[in-house]
Image (cartoon, rainbow, N blue to C red; front, side, top):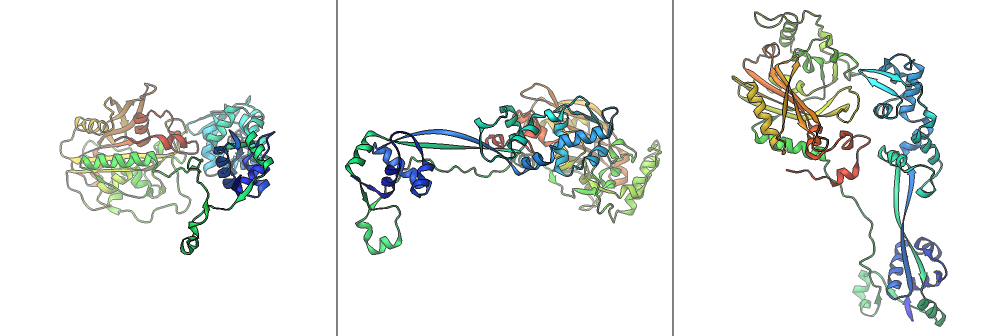
Length: 508
């Protein structure tokens, strides 16, 4: 019998008594694993070998996982700092504890999102408590990191860690699983017989080259067969994130409803973010606990002087003969302070004042779908940064009925027809109401936005002499109603589900 050189090498290396893996054959024959795999399939077709397959799963820590194995998990560091600060007796300022823990950047978000989940304590309204009965030494995830710190690609069966803990570490991006198909080869009786009789090596060519074609030798050589059924390496193609796809869909809908898109800075002065909205400077939402201020630069250089004077007067004295204002201190230096915008209404104030693109004459419709930043407590419906669908309509004689009708038309484009409205208070709108939708999986009402008619105290300083109805809607919560997500952290952030993102199709 004549066989190609690679097949002969495999036959002479394999055994009839015990199975030999393809990797072992490759190492013994000094051939590439893919070459050995091809030879094995060809020999199987000839009845000379039997091939068995199994899937082996291994786990290994990511770089982030190894870092936490060395330095402790962020939530444990936060807990230890909270105990040190006395949070087991009385609530302590969250900022104080975070500073003492030494956590920075994304590690802060990770610590906050896992602190309560593991029962280390409670975070509420900018304060933190610590449960003195919590046991960091018994933290299953921390112990698993320690157990895996000194091993690479450990078989799952050999790891003394329960499956739930491995799953949680994988969701957190601290552990990677690798599945590999292991093929093992055993010689058949026919192969043993042929080997005893003697097998000759046949010269075969595995690739057509320019030299073979130009010389004409291709007519005389024997080409190796290709196994088109052999497994190929799998590649996951990139795709636009479902959140971005939905944002583009929202833009298409609003443009179709006659709106134009606004643009503006993510970092802006408190003047544009809050003061122009008739938000008092001593409002709790304007404290340093609820906003992300900038360390450098700290203040904006230029603000329109006339507008600053009018806004200050509205805050102190009110607008119109019956206006009273807040009778509270108003500081221009505070208004000039820079921060990450807590809502995209800062864009609306820039546009309505004429500062961004000049004076606007009614009717006008504008929107934006942009990111905003708030120092909220992380939970299934709140993030520190998220996308807001901002919009407003400037026209004469607008009413709440016009606003509700706009929402019903907008949400119907996404198959949502059960919007509910609830009266609400905002410093900058009157009347005001919140929007709610029914979650398709849990059946619970989910708050999806806030809206109202801008107050005279806000519009008069901006130079607007007609009605303006406005809203801020949550893009992530729109996704929850469309696809049934129960936790917005599943779609972006450190715990997002990549498989879910790959498989979910955006509907139009």
